[in-house]
Length: 548
Image (cartoon, rainbow, N blue to C red; front, top):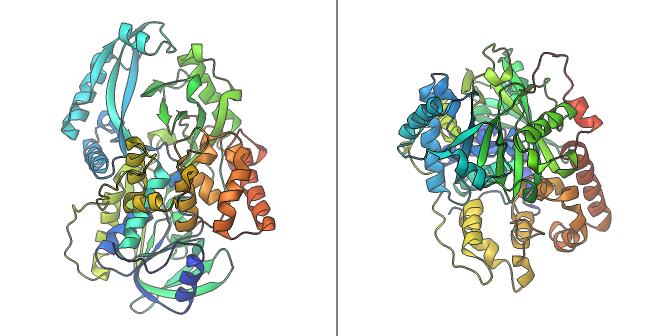
């Protein structure tokens, strides 16, 4: 594993920025540190290109930390006749499960069938046969109403005729981004958060790029052969400087998290909402149960947070009440929520649910922009971006089917770490799993989990030391998910968080309290129940937009 040029340890970001200010030329600069930008950085760095990736917020801050956490093949595309998209997605899903077990894992899905209601058992079964055929594996099977009632007594039993089981995969999307970025860095990419591309212009044989350090306000001018605009729903900000615009349709999707004891499911239920027949997922994730997602047109996003609205919360709770009446899920059961804005390349569909999830790549001289696409197919998107810019970059003979993730090996099991925990650590952190296990330094309590989550104190501390954390919310909302899994965003454990993290960050008491106050405000306004701020961020004049 090559030593990254820029360290992600405390102070590394600042020294990396200083080197950039001193003047530098790159083969490729990437704006956007979500899964698309990370994928491009990984594929470009493995080719030996000099790569700089920057994000004006934190890595995966936008859509890539707020998805439904599903690595799926797009079953609905078959019904729409788009077998090609499904084929690519299914093959990439299988690849990711093979390369990153513990990070991308198989998850059973269950579609209940009811008398006289769509979809019927046999039509859906034919769809699943094609789905399995594309994956070259058989996952689907049918369960009788009796077996389903015994297994899931909280499910609505009225007119139930059975359920079809199939399979897709589940992940932690933000950890997926981080692991891809670690791979890019191991191949020499320089990766900095809280650095924005403020402008770009064409030079004689380079693109001239102005950067801004969002922490200090300092600026730097650099150049590259290619600037990749992988900023998702914000893709038009850089394109507009060239007089170009893409028809990107922002669509907001929101989820709620409840305690598993309220709805203990070991599968992802696919439920058609009784009001509009949109599929909603109810699934296990990180020891909790998640319900989502909505799909609403969203106003042109600014550089701020988004959150769930009252309309969306009520919509999801009505689904839960209809499909799981015995669970009696109410607003008081909601631990947290999250909302993300998807970049859909608009085709003029009546509502955002009907728009394609495929990606589009545009080239404006040395600016290559990409938007749309699925979490599952990030590798294919990256290859399309590099192909679009191939005549501007050095020719490199590389295996396009090469692994995304370096084999993490099998780190020896530390005392007190179960095989399941080791599998998770290896999946989430790859070759760095052994660093976490060796960082304990005699602290046996470091192997304890934080409350009833699966997160170890040891990995929390390693993230703080080694993953370019600038703010407390970077750590608790994206490097790990304590902010989504624990009441009050995990701040009921503030004293222990402070004891372990303050020395790592080097924050004095004033700075610690400032960061806690910042995090608490973000969590209360955008990751809890609907707030005036989340309502304002979602405000739109499109009264025809559906919670669907």
